[in-house]
Length: 189
Image (cartoon, rainbow, N blue to C red):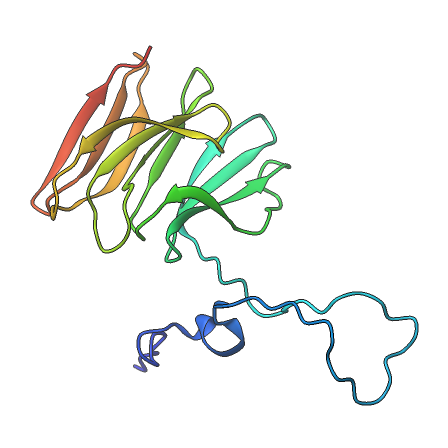
C-alpha cells in the first residue's frame, strides 16, 4: 500500500506552497515595463490568481433564515473563518476571515431557539488552548463575550460541542486538560 505524504517540504501542505503560498506582502505596481504591446481593448488590473490562502476545516453551521446559512471554521491563519449560503446550502461564498481569534482548534456553534447564535471557542493564539470562551451574536458577525468556561495558563481545553435542549438549557462538553470530558450546563435568559 502506497503512503502519500501531503505535508512534506518543511511541514507545509502542497496547496500552500509555490503559487498557492500565502502572500506575505501585497504590492501595487503601476509603472511596469511592458515588452511588446498590450491590446488596446484590454483595460484593468492584474490580481493574483493563485490559491486562496484562507483555510477552513471542521465547519459548524448557523441558520439565519430558511435560506441563509453561515459556516464558521477553525483555521491555520489565526482567525475563525466564515462562508455564507443564501440558497440553503446550494452555493457558498468564498471563505473570509472573521474578527474572532482562532488557534487552529475546534470550535462549535448553534443557533438558539430565540434566534441568537452561541459560539464556544478558544479565544487565544496558537499553540495555546486556554481560555475556552463562550460568545453570543444576533447576526453571526458581531460576537459579544459571554463567559470564560476555563482560563488556566498552560492547560488545554479543546474540542467543544454544544446543544440546546427542549428545556432551553445549553449543554457544552469539551476535552478538559486532555484527561477528561467536562459537561457544563448554562441557563440563558
